[in-house]
Length: 296
Image (tube, rainbow, N blue to C red):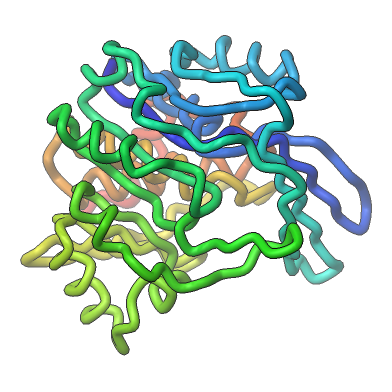
């Protein structure tokens, strides 16, 4: 298969002043973007509990994902509770966590993948053996750092510095972080010095997303700014980072051009803004049509 996405699936509960709703979450769910845009096989490696809804499993299967890496453990699945106030501010809690994912959870078919993307929701979710094994397979290894910057205290999610990033980043080729996460990822005073610190640990590409201000992709010798690609409407931003990363990786492997791949990823993410959950994902033709006004 072309890409494997590793991390917990989540049974999310979304609470707003108007309503409550359940939602399928976690980067492996948003891996459904890969088959939608023409990936040559996409799989997930994850752990769930016995409480995980069959309807979600059906959605993942129907979305074209290889589910041979899905492991079910006794107990509960990971469950995030996202509470939004009238101004849209979010308070986040974790009511349960599935067991960690280990390197022995891979099958031989996973280790033949061209790309591994790791996107933990919490810091203890992915055992380092997973990342080390992926690197030794010869695949391109990508990491969204968000989970490593989260600490769960009495169910509350707190941002916290990552004390020993070198232990993981030495196995990683591409790092993705949100602009607001940089101060927790590095104690450097500027963005450029933070990027230099990350690159010195091993990665050769660093993607910094900036919400409504687009993104910047750094390589060891240069950087490129990616514009915000406008959506036709705004419904929900959940999963946009996952869609961006997965789409970027697939396009980067095709073109070797970080600028083209960044614009492609940003365009895929714009479609994700228009729907709730990992559904109604675009085709490659739809993405390329929306990209046209943004080409230089």
